[in-house]
Amino acid sequence: MREPCTDRADAGRRLARDLGGPARWGDAVVLGLPRGGVPVAAEVAAALAAPLDVLVVRELGLPGFPELAVGAVAGVGGEVEAVRDDEALAHHRVEGEEFDGLTGATVRAAVAAVRRRAPARVVVAAPVGARRACEAAWEVADEVVCSFVAVEGDWPDCYRLNRSVPGVPAAPADPREVLDGFGRWRTWMWANSDVVDFTRWLRGFNTALPEADRVGLSGAGRAARRAPHG
Image 1: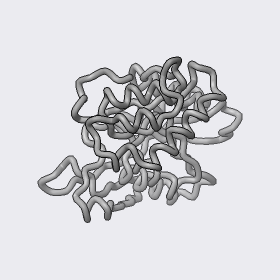
Image 2: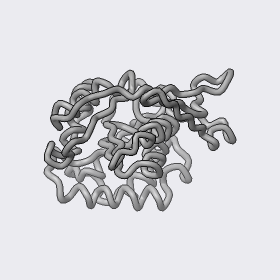
Image 3: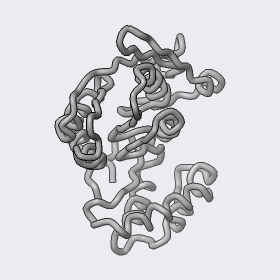
Image 4: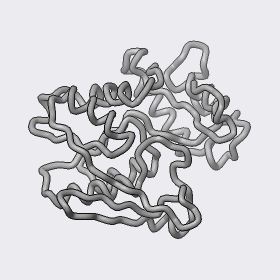
């Protein structure tokens, strides 16, 4: 099973492996989003033998709630593109609290700005992304590569799920057995048909992979924020 990334450079090298070799990407240009995305992009550009540039994106916080991203602006070549997150505005939903990764408003603004330059294709790639961000990326990009999709869940419960999904010996063969035992989270959040179907699919997907490359599912819930990840 894959180990957690040690830093952004390590995350970039792993993302580059997921993207494949330079032959696939031809004359691609790698754009890094400051601040955290630039060291990741630098490793990707080096691995793909592609030029590296920076795409500046700024999230817009709701007045009085700066952690709530309700939109973003991005600029390319003197042109500025702005998008807003209508769902966040309607529900005051906080996306990505203390989260170091891709978010929905950011990716929509970035892709919109790049589209102004009429590229042949736009590929969004990130080592980690929130579920909503990945969904938003698929709506606007030609391809999305994300090495790790973040979900909110209590670490002790997710640790047991993280053993079942990659097929760790002595772990339950059916992730449903683990989900039924989740203690801190309401049934509708975790032990529902969508999560059961996804975790069963992920376990089946892992069976075709070498053990070191199998995908895990770690929790990052607020109740267990200080606990190590499984």
